[in-house]
Image 1 (tube, rainbow, N blue to C red):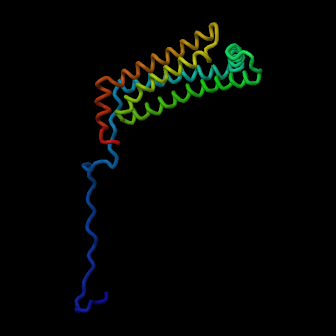
Image 2: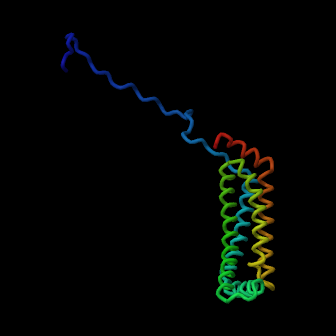
Image 3: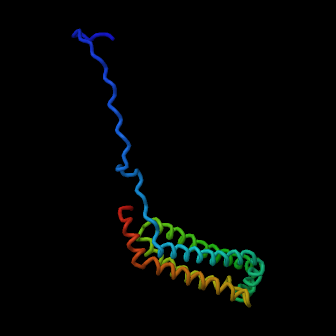
Length: 189
């Protein structure tokens, strides 16, 4: 080794020893607590509600030709004296508008439910007006998407089941165990 200007030789010291492994250090990501039973049940009820609504939409899409024929008759009765093209266009707009409105409300409910499951307490309050708007959209779409006869009763039963399931899931989200679980995540924005 070369000696410094003072003439003394210095030895380079070895690095300090590594600390031992310790289990007392906190994990880098905080562990999230398990979902309470009420929240798990609410999630399941909402998912079954979405499935019932989507089953109606898929059934309406599968039977769209008969629905459009029926709607053309309804529109022709409402707008007497119109040509067939404008009646067909109006029936298409009503049919696809009803489908899109129902799908949009369902997607919004699913997004807000995901926020609830992300421990955002405000989201459960948002589900109340969303469910009310879902009822309004169902009422309006029922005039256009519910066929006559037995098929219409199945549509109404599935929609009714979906609303009852969603309402039960909403009620479960306001029970004390769910509230306690949601308040545990207050530090999150």
